[in-house]
Length: 500
Image (tube, rainbow, N blue to C red):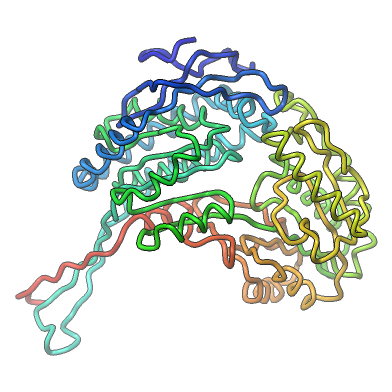
């Protein structure tokens, strides 16, 4: 299959995995382009070739950045209906091609196809939300200034304008939707964007480019450049890219921020998601529900989500009844081929990632933790795993495992449970299983996280809500409108000589 203009570089028969493909072009200032070298995208499940991707040269990267910088004023002034129409178009086209795109995500990422379908659906919503926000954002706020004598006859009008070109850096774990969370808000706000997808999973991002190319957005307003990670610092340092939106590891995110202290950085980093089960969540029905949700969302995406359940913190009054339910629910997770609709848990993104998870579990077990189920690696796959008695200083307790591994601990009461949640350098989201609305409000006040989910696991995210963390989990917020606010700044216009 060719990646030449006029052909679909990722099309394949509905319901089947994509075949081996020829080279996929990238997107330079809104047009398809090829570089001088390529790299292979392979399946984490079986190692087969999913596609070859053309790599932009330094000159082509420069052309993309220069084009985005040159068009920034024109794009900021583009009528809202033009930007909204483009975003609506991408949303519709994603929906039309859901099965095809889900199979592509599964092939390049190893994500079970049933979860990949959900990811496509979320990206459909993100672009639709962005179209809606493009139509109502930046409408202006009027403020009377004649509250003091010196302001008589004056009116202030506040509007938001783009800060400049956005550099979006996306991760591998949601290769479509987290690219959508960079691209859609930028377009909605009238900010040109240069997107760098993860090298392991660039094909989903390139498909977004294919759909954007069908719109009437100004040339130069967007580029999708699959450059390797060792070329990222040059983009980060480029003064023509004043806004950086990064999703990924804590180490890389803060190194970016430290290297460009005068730029605006939005960082969505790691987590160590905790699910708290309190004493009032005590019926058999309650505990069955909690166990099922915990098992599902400690293992979905192979645990490769920064809000997956990594820690269960259970009140002593329910611990002994909850633990066997959690173990049984985890053991019921179906592992295997991600292209199979029955599969719940596929491989990790690479064998190296699985080896790291294996080493952390082995370290905890050597320090006295008990492995109740799982604890085995097979290539890039790691069995869904539950541990108890993990020492507080074990790597598994302190860091983000980003794998299908769950720890369970017993606490005595609400205060001890909330203290255990906060005993982490991360603070992305937490889930609290309780029926008590007063407890819910205390959790909202006490927990040092960006989001508190009541009656469920920490893994819930609605794509329109503000999403981000506290402490070492990052700065700024995603969620379409909130990202648009991050990409823009307020500018005040004062009108004089008015009869108010």
